[in-house]
Length: 106
Image (cartoon, rainbow, N blue to C red; front, side, top):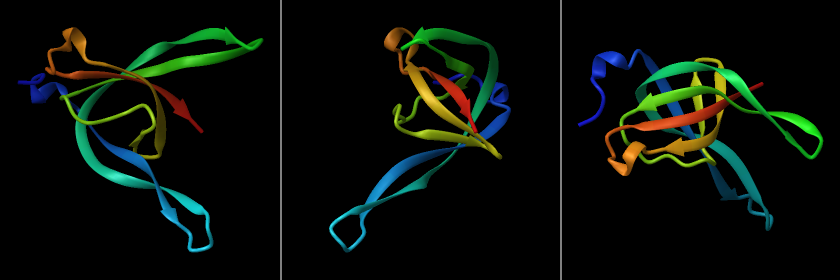
């Protein structure tokens, strides 16, 4: 049993990077929709850290949703807003819900 469905106030779409043979010995990469899901988005004060003398943002939002198959190579779309996944948390390993840490990208 997940979080009460009334708390999920946004519909997001999960995209997965799929590679296909281009017929010339190479591959073509395309983002393909993995379907929509209901979620709640929480804005974070941007967490930042130094990496190789550059300031980088670790996460800009946290997404709460029911437990589902998702990995850090996927992307999440919210209308015209695109999120890159920076981390996935399954609180207490209970498979009750997921907390997906994301970074908004241009």
